Image (cartoon, rainbow, N blue to C red; front, side):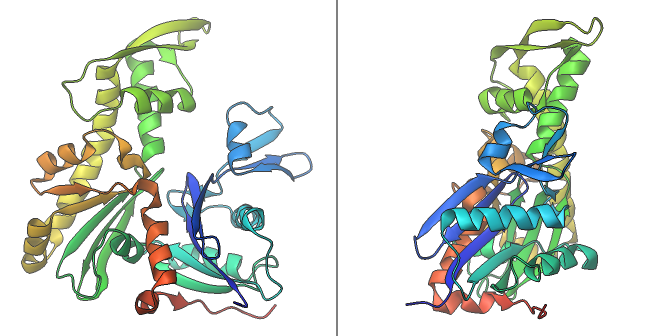
Length: 339
């Protein structure tokens, strides 16, 4: 019998992905928390909090404790993790062993946020192992970090895109850019406001993206939506064309494409050649957009392979590391202070 239960955690901006070793199952919940502002009482966490998003009364604030792939609100992120872990299983007296996937491109202050959570009152009994997020993605995608001579991974998430290059048994370069699914939703809202003089919410924009979003300009669809007229301030119905959605998404995808091309230009020729042979690996929750890999392949001139793991790519890598002793070397213990 194990003294500590093992978990792999990917604290994404939109969703928290938790792998339970004892149950051999991946749990996915919205990374949201609802807090009543007058007494700071937590009303809901996870999927329950998301159901209140853009519907809650003015005295209840519903938001994610993450921003652009990084921890923005430490106490609330700690509470979300503690609540979701207890929801899966009751914690052991000795605490748990938790494998955290952490982005590479973090400042010292941003890294301290994880350290603060680890040493918090609720989490300090746990033993914490740190895994670099690009390494976890690589293992999930079947790339051996030890043997690869040059691999590029582009993870497009809810609020950020992490571009990484692996070679020589390490991540040689990684960068987070603030473009993801949320920015796509906001771009759709802006485009509809500009073209149709109609204001819609981000949840409506997300539904339009899911239903009509496609990185192929040849597709033509239309959907009715309800919003607020920008001029009169009254509710109005409007038919939205897929061309409007494509124009909004194109702005975001062009920025991602430019960052990928910039990365490739700065990459040493021998590594760039290996990437050209292998192709770019594309993953993340926002890569569900149809033909996104086709667009990036045409834009960059490199082959692009799309992973079907989507938002579960990183947590799948953590799962493999937890279950394979030979992969344990990619997990590094995080030092904890005795409180």
